[in-house]
Length: 217
View 1: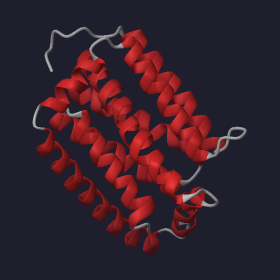
View 2 (view 1 turned 60 degrees about the vertical axis):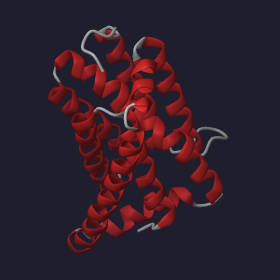
View 3 (view 1 turned 45 degrees about the horizontal axis):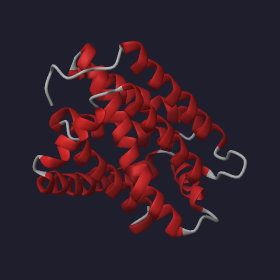
View 4 (view 1 turned 180 degrees about the vertical axis):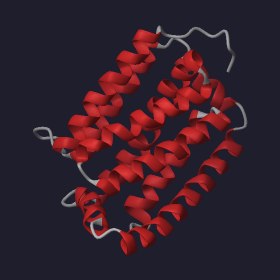
């Protein structure tokens, strides 16, 4: 990734972040939109913000293609290992939270209640194809990348992490908010370190599958 590549205007990046905040705050507040359950609405939001990212950032697609061409196997391996490491952190954190916070069990249960009545195959498909990769393409590959190009990489990391965490506040679920904060910092740092949408997408997708499908808490 070069420093001379075309960048969207700061106002356009800010507008994309604001739209994402509105969409995801509504999602976590209401959890259902007409015929769309939580998972379908989440996937729809991701499609909207990623498409908008491509529309306003002329270098977006090129950066992703270059990322896939440069050591993809190494990035996939690091992504998988990082997802497993993050899962281990959450496993330890769950034990600690259940022992410290009286509301922890209920909060965790509310997160998993989102799976109720939804075919497991559809959850797996949406996570693997849209949700896991799409969240990283937008929050880190687009928003953190472009914010960092304007205000500095570390400041962009902090801003993206704060925005990613803040949209979960609408859920009113302290455990989900804490989880989002940990994930936002972890994946933000991962992008700050490697600047690889592919690596982040693999990490996020594998972690989602571990937590919601393979070894749920």
